[in-house]
Length: 319
Length: 184
Image (spheres, helix red, strand yellow):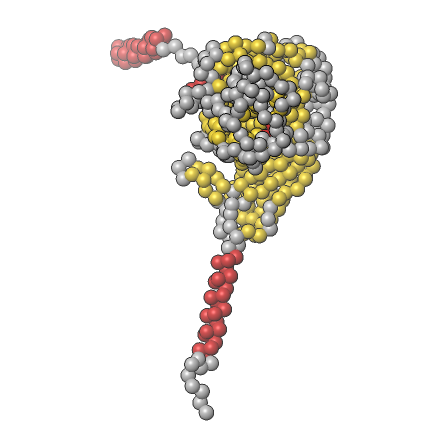
C-alpha cells in the first residue's frame, strides 16, 4: 500500500509563499542557503501498511549555484532541548528511509524534488533528513576564520494508528513537573514557566496553553509553541503577559492590582493523538507595594497631624 | 378566452426570455473552482559575507562580529536553530603544509544570539545566554513563532585557547559553524 502525504501542488504553493519573501542582504548581496517544504514529515501508518512514500522539495536561495547533500540522521533530544544528530541505525526507533537522490546541484532559484521511501514495521519511528548546502571557504593564511553552514533538518515521525487515526502501540502520557511563578510582584509583565515530564516510552510534543485570570475573569490566553521531548525529559514552556499588536507594538496586559490565577494546560501529543491534559495552577499577587507604602506613610502622617492639631498643636498650654 | 390569451402569452414570452438569457449567461460564464493545500515550509539563508577574525591572540576574546541569518517560514509552531562546531586542524593552499596536531575546537567560538528582528507577527522568541560551541547550543530558550521573513542577528567572537599552537607557514584555522534549523 502506498501513502502519499503531500502533492506537488502543496509543495509548489509553499515555495511560492517562500519565494515571494526571498531573503537577500541589501548591503552585501550575499546569500547562501536553501528552502525546504514540507518542514516536517509525519506518517500515520494503518495496520497492514509496510511501505511509506513521500517527497519534499529543496530550493536554492543562494546568490550562486550550490551543491546540496541530503542524508538521513537519527535524533536524540537532550535535557537542554537540543536536537542532537546520530548516524542512522543508532537508536531503536531509527527511521529506515531511502532518499533519491542524495546530492543535488541547484542553480540560482532552482527547485528539485527528493523522494523518500521506507519499509516500516508497526512501531513508532523518529529520525530526520539533514539538508546541507555545501560551501568552500577558508581563512587567509595565519588567521582564524569561520565557515557558516546553514542546514535544515526535516523531522520524520511515523507511528501505527487504528482505523480512526489514533496512535496505537504507544501509551501517550505525561505528568506535571512544576510551574514557576513568583508569589508577589509589584507590576507586570508576568512570565510563567510550565514544566511537564514525558512519562511515555516515545518522543512526544508538548503543547501548552496558559490562562491568566484576575478575580475569576480570564483576561489573557497564550498558546505556546510545541516542545519536543524524549521519554523522561521535561518540556518547559515560558509564557509572558506581553501581547504583540500591529498598531501599538508590545503591550503588557497585567492589571496594576489583582490576585492573578495562572493555569497551564499541557497536552502531550504524537501525530494527532493526545494524552489526558496536564493542568497546573499557581497564584500571584500584583500589588504596587512601593506606591502603597508611600500612600500608607502619607495616611499615617495625616492621621498623626490631625490628632496633634486636635490636641492643641503649637498653641501655648493654659496654666 | 381572448383576455386570457392577451395576458398569458406576454407572461410566457417574458418567462422564456428570462430562461434563454440565463442559459446564454451561464454558457458565457463558466465557473472554475481551484483548490490546493499549502505545506509548511522553511528556509534559512546566511546573508553575512564570509568573514575571518584575522590574527587572534591566544586567550583573548576578539571583538564581536555580527552574523545574520535570514529565515522564512509559514509554520506557526516556530523554529529552533542549533549551532555546533567540531575540532578542526589547520588548512590552506600552498605553501601551507598542514600539521594535523595543530587544532582548535568549537569551544573557541562564542555566540551571543538575540531575539529575532524584522518579523511582524507572534513572538520574537527569547535568546539563550551567550555560549560557546564546545557542545551543540540552541540559539533560543523560547522559540520564535514568527511567520513570514525575519532575521536572526547574533554576535560571533573567537577566544583561542591559551595553549593553542601557532599556525604553520601559510596555514590558518577555519572552523565550521553548523546552524541547523528545525521546525518545532
